[in-house]
Image 1 (spheres, rainbow, N blue to C red):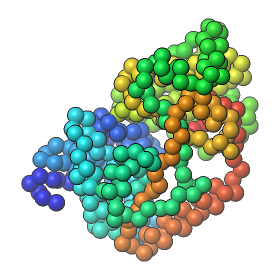
Image 2 (image 1 turned 90 degrees about the vertical axis):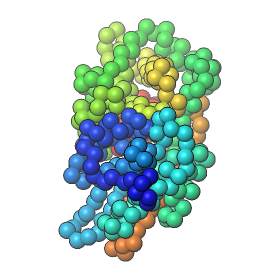
Image 3 (image 1 turned 90 degrees about the horizontal axis):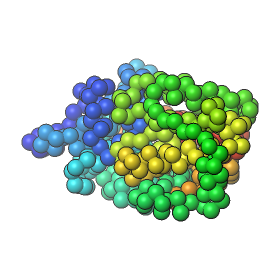
Image 4 (image 1 turned 30 degrees about the vertical axis):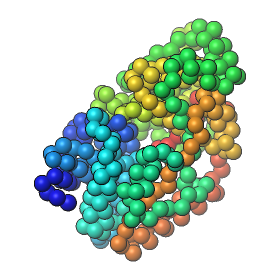
Length: 365
């Protein structure tokens, strides 16, 4: 890279500085926050790379570093990155190309790691085409039932009136019924709102009697660690003052993701989940959010969740597959064995089925 125009900085940004950098990017997301990385993986296991052009930050990425032994092999895992859509800067395909080179040079060539990237890109999008061009020398992992992320994404550019008209008629009728039930919706990003959600979630678990890998306490710690502008939005629906349904979503950059949802018995009767989604959509519109990822769908495993989300008439799309690069046979073998084990676990695990989207524990963790 030309030192005069392009510069790469590795592991210089603190957690606070990283949060400030994230606010500069339209493609920012919760999985690239220092809070998510720190709580999920531990701050000491994170690595951050910053790409600058003439002194201006134009690309960033936070990775998880996994080294199972003191020996020099392991994995560098980049989830929902890198970020290059800097607010106010016109699209330039050279930025992701330079970022791809920087990632390869630092983690593959210098550290001898297996670099695995799960892009924040959906099939058919400009971002997916840009990723394909920038990372053309990387290996594309084949998609299968165990690793594909399929979701519904709602375009929020139409007016609220147009969005509502676009909902499935049955979904729209249930929303109207919820509005007639005189329910109250409150929203916030503080501990009190999240604790209220957790109480509803506990009711869901007791009613459904399921075991879940979702750790709502972990999300609580993430919420507490997030910078104020990046905190998750928690919406609570009350019927006669009693909390009956809740939704947790993340809105960063120009997009939003549905993360957690839960409903009590009374919430099912009052149709609170419909009102919560509509209230969230209105809030996202006010913030200028352009798209809303409804958090993943599984038509066969969770048909109730699928039909609920489909009622919002979002586009049915899949995330592009992971890409990888390595010069280490040991690191490559380690990753392949891990992925095979994960596929086996998923194959032999019995899928859970939930009644509606408000009872979906989490889309991704």
